[in-house]
Image (cartoon, rainbow, N blue to C red; front, side):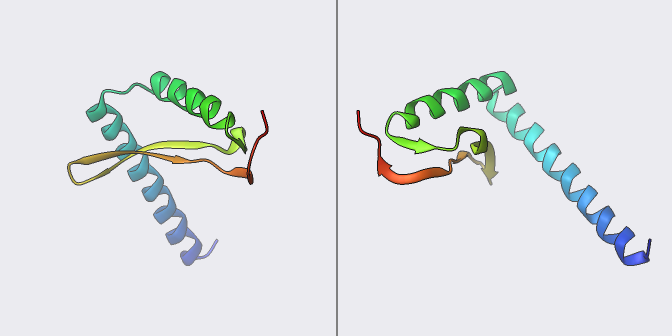
Length: 86
């Protein structure tokens, strides 16, 4: 393995570790345990699925922080832009 591959692999590992640490700190500051975040994700999927078709296995829910502000970020891929018929 060349020096460039080793360098980029270290950078990726460092970025992953930094992202994990940031996530742990955000969870700690929001006092939202992972189990509650998972429950929130399940409830969001259930509610949104009533109105539009989504890809439930591809839904991503994250907590992020910008300065002192904390955000709940949801990435919810839609199957189709139209509404479901009831």
